[in-house]
Every structure is written in structure tokens, then in C-alpha cells.
Image 1 (cartoon, rainbow, N blue to C red):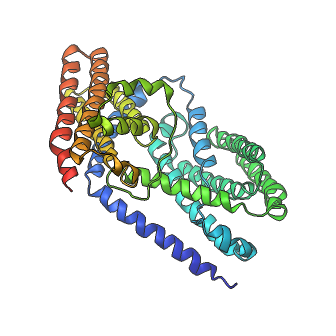
Image 2: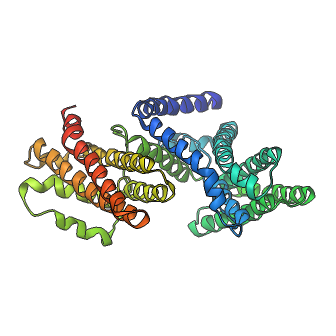
Image 3: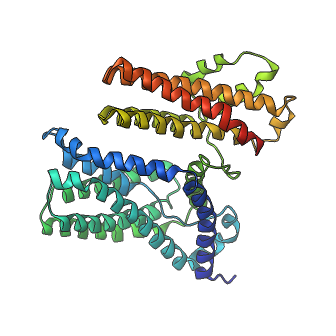
Length: 405
């Protein structure tokens, strides 16, 4: 069977980005970018104060090492693999070398963009505590990019291993080697030491990781799993702003949160109230985002000293959290079994309103107590009132409009 690798790769990449751009436009039109812009303005204003407050004993080199070791070790080669490839492309594996080289180049470019972005954001800390040279920052970005290429190439070969224990062990080996290399960069070791380390990594890849491709075939199931996980991560972000029918949620048992179900009394009209409670607690899409936004808000509130700035942050974070809870409306959209319950759409709306108010009240109490401890009782009352106003607006004005669509 003849396969045009170039056309296959181009078609799959184009198909993914056509879908992604459609959702990115919706995210851009949602006002989310304006929120990010405001947070960026706040962050820029307080960055200098944060650096002055940061103790001189802060382990800056270790901090950079941990951040970039994680960034460089994480991530896999995007192959855009599909379930059907298990049957149709497996026999042609030997003829797809250019396809996988394109996948490696694409993944490397995308990951390098993230590395450069994080390094530029952290550059004031780098200049203040490590070295004031701007050219050194770009040199480090270049070397980190090369280290990322090594990790992607080695990671692609190690995924050929069948045994999960060996697969995990190899990931930890890469993590250790990457950590040593990143530490050498940020501790400003000599050029010769860095070059020797780079040569050692290249020889190790050629002598060990590359040999895996000669000994083991590709594990297409794992390629499909990696691609599916990457796409679902993007869908989870997009689902915060619009309905994503293709989203598949991961269900996690969280026994410590089971008492939340006690908010729901056993009644026919409370069917959706119970279903929404289970979806929120057991799905990583809602509970995880709710917790992260709440904790992030407390972190921002702890450093902002301007009164109106704190009020604006309270409104922004409660608004963003309410947007996440709104998406519960679509959680059971693809489940036909739910349609069998003998309850009207009106009960679904009331149940959704109930949980927006309950979760909003919990968050408002967290904000209020945090502001009370960090500032004053008046700040706590303002935080409580503003958060509740946002959630009442979402529950009784915005949400009914969403159900009419």
C-alpha cells in the first residue's frame, strides 16, 4: 500500500488546526482575553515589589531548575494518530519515517514557544538574582530548546517499550538527566562543561535510545492514547467557553467530597441536582478548575495592596469560576439515558442555579475570610458581597438565557 507521508501529515495537522482555530475564536470573543490582560497589568505592576520582597536566601537557581526540568521533561511527540491507524498504518510503519520526523519537528517548535514564553516571564527574576545579561537569556533559551528536542526524541523511542514499569523508569532517567543539565545551565557552569554535557547526552541517545527503534516496534495504542489526551486537554479548556460535544471527561472517585451530596434531598425534582453534584465532584474538569481559580485568587489578593484592585480581582475570579460551573449544562448532553428521566428542562435549570449559588457561597466565604485575615473586616464584607452579586447575576440573569439557546 502506497502512502504519501507529506500529504497525510499536512492533512492531519490542517484538520486539527481548523478545529482548534474555531474554538480559539470563541474563546477570544468571550472576554477571557480581556481578563488575562487585566491580570497581566496587575502582575506587571507588582512584579518589582515582589522581587524586592523576595528574600535574598531564596534558592533562585533551584527554582529555575525545577520549573524548566518539569517543562522540558513533560510532553510527548504529537503524531495526530487516530484509532484507525492501529489497523491501517501499523503494516506501513517502516515507510513512515518522514511522517514521524515531521511530528518531531512540529512538537519541538510548539514546545520551544512555551519554554521561551516562560523564560521571558521569569526573566526579571533571572536578571535580579542570577545574571543581568540579556544575551545570556537568549543563549539559555536556545540550549533549553535543544534539550527539549533531545527529550522529545528520547521520549518517542522509549514509548516503544511494552512493559509499563520500564516505560516509567526511562521517564525518570530522562527526568534526572534533564535536571542535571538544567541545573548546570542556571548555575552558570563553564562553556566547556555545558558542551561536554551536550555531547554526553547525544552519545547516550545514539547508543541507547536510538537502538530501541531497532529492537522494538511502535506501540500505536500508546500513540493514540497520547494524542487523545492532548486533544482532550484542549477540549477541556474550550469547554469552559462553549459546548464541546467531543469532550470525554475523566471520572475520579473523591470520597472526601461525598458529604456534598447531602445538599441533595431525595425527590423526583432533584434528579439533576444530584447528577450535577456527581459531575462536579468526580470530573476533573469542574472541581479541579474551581479549586485552582479559588486558590489563585487568594494568592493574588494577598499581594494586591490597592483597595479597588482587590475588588476587581474578586469580581474577575468569581466571574471566571461561574463560567466554569455554567458548563455543567452540557455535561450530560451526549448521554441519552439522562433523557429518560421524567423531569422537565425547568428542573434542570433550577438544579443548575442551586449549585451555582452553593458553590458561589462557598467561594465567597473563602474570599471573605481570606480578606478578613489579610486586611480588615470591611474588606471581608466587601469581598463577600461582590462575590455573591456575581453569582446571583449568573444564576438568575445569565444562566436562564443559556438554557433558552
